[in-house]
Image (cartoon, rainbow, N blue to C red; front, side):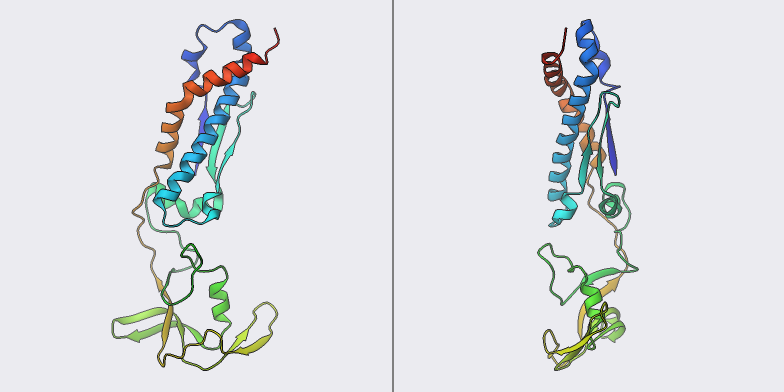
Length: 225
């Protein structure tokens, strides 16, 4: 997900009537204006992510970046970092949610982080417990595939990295019945739309002339006769 801001299509009217000195300073002024506009787009897109997504993580919000324009490259770019762009793409173009694995992980009875998401490494940690198994279970509502926890007083926990094991009673299931921790499902259609490109275009169009005026004033102030 990227949006390029170029002065080529907006400068024709602005350039008319400029004297020679102003024309020499125009590339510098344009680079300043486009860079300022790119920062405004970043602020607007981050605000939109906060409004449209349910409790987005700081990682998601910080993934919107800008590349400044230069006198020799009169294009500024606003983009979303690759990892975040992969799962935000359906929010812009439609489609289904991007899955981290083969199935949608739908947490049921497991602690989540402050953003309502599975903690990093949670699934790997569960796989290292003797009271956990992954697979389908026949229930009253049909076959449910997911991560299940057996009833147990203690569990043997294996560290996948070191291979060391320990026995613990922490986090065990004492309910007397299987507990569904995470349900596996198919990717669901994304209904929310970010309007990333349209919002960026609107910000640029609404602020281009004002930013160019400010940038030209700054460029002329630093110009040498």
